[in-house]
Image (cartoon, rainbow, N blue to C red; front, side, top):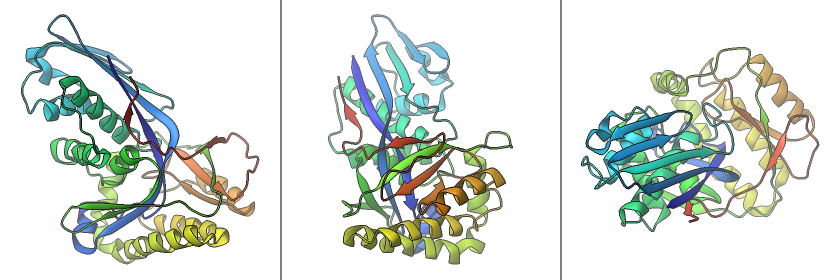
Length: 316
């Protein structure tokens, strides 16, 4: 049996500049970190020809009909690893998350993709050693095979672990710089209260992508913020670090009227009134609010998270 563990992620600034319609023209960048909340994937060969997939549902298919698996990510990962052919025999796959990751803004879908690819390549006997290569394979699955209207930040953040400045070049290549800030970064996540129906992340991102021309000046400022925040972290300027996170959230809200809700705004206003940095994780409307302080602060309904430095890994 193969078991992989892949962290979820939070981003501080730059989200939105990782989509192709932006970085193909201007390059893009995100400053983000992996966190100590995880997706676990188990994969093992069976002694029959069945593909069995367990997540919130259980699916079964004969290996010759693997393409009928309804879970899109599992289907696409099998397609990628076996290059469209059927596996040599049956496989059993289990997806387990520490948090409910659907629509939370923590990169859950990409963490599943990275962790599942890691497990399946090990199962096949052809493990991918470099985490950035797993991230690239996950981008191919989500953006090319499934044609999701997403960017590349989640796949790399979840695969690499640690805190990174991830740069997306106009030729589609990706670079990253490890960041070890000289200031304490105390992070908490707060479930966002939403009076609206659960968000459709891909629909929100499609709507934001359709506004790319209008939003170009805002995205340019969000791109520049990444390097300002990187410098603030390196020199230990904690007040500037907090201020830039809040300025980044103010810019993000300009991208679309569907980014935030009154309840989210009240939660973020409370955090900033205490001297913290705050933003809603992900595409908008619902999910988790990230609170960042230079020292621990007691926040109702919040739970602490720390940086995961290992990234995706095989643990069994």
